[in-house]
Amino acid sequence: MSISIESQQKEKIDPNAEMAEELSDQQTDEIDLNADTAQETSDEKLGWVFDETQKHYPVFYLTDIPDKRQYNAEMYSGIVHGITAWVAISSNSPTNVIEDLKAHNNADEALPMPFLNSTVEEVYEFFKNHLRPADDDPRGFYHTFSYFTFLVVDADCVKSEPWQCILCCDAPDFGDPHPETRLKQLRLPVAHAVEGLSLLEDLFKTPSEFVEKPDFVLGMIPPSWEVELHNDQGERIGRREIASPGDARGKKGHSVWKQEESARQLRAERSAARRKL
Image 1 (cartoon, rainbow, N blue to C red):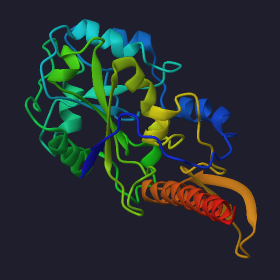
Image 2: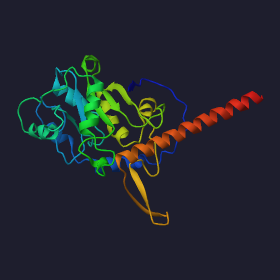
Image 3: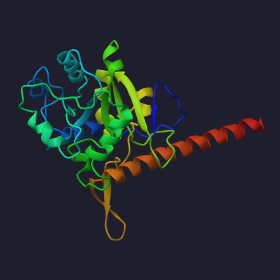
């Protein structure tokens, strides 16, 4: 099931945002590519030079791109600190995606577009089943592909002014039927969508917060992608390790649920106080 978010307004309790400073450090560890490397690709290519040792955000093209060079330039303009890498998925074979991407790194011809005329729901199933890391994968944060987020480009995206793409994310969000989550589709200008990839993937923002509060960063201590270590007596030992994707989803979902519960309690208290007047 998927939903589209435009400008839903929800009453929430603002958490502390002290982890904003750590976002840049985590993203820098995540990938070590730069725009100069990306610009070396052919004008007909879409995305970065593929390196399976780095994390890439999949892009599914459901339509042809009339001006691939200019569309690439729009996406590069959304890069934050030069550390967000994406790659057009050029194979719909469950067993050959990585081999196909590596083969096209040095090829002169344009990348194939195997998802032309597909739907968002269809590419979402492909992403879940064949690209995202397993819930218990200890390399989840540093996996070849992202876990929560991907991009989709359809015919309406390339007809729009400015050009758009659809930022898709199934990370926990306000309004989800806890503990389940739904795919959120944010149709945004290209640069804005690319800017949001790491924010949503690293769970520093929920999809609705990215739309409603572009300057607000949700902070958790420790962040959802980190686990604090304890000794046999249950005492913290001052070290952290990277959480598995499933654990990160669970931690974020619990945090969102607690905020929603606090907001509901506050509304109930205010309502009770008004009735006494």
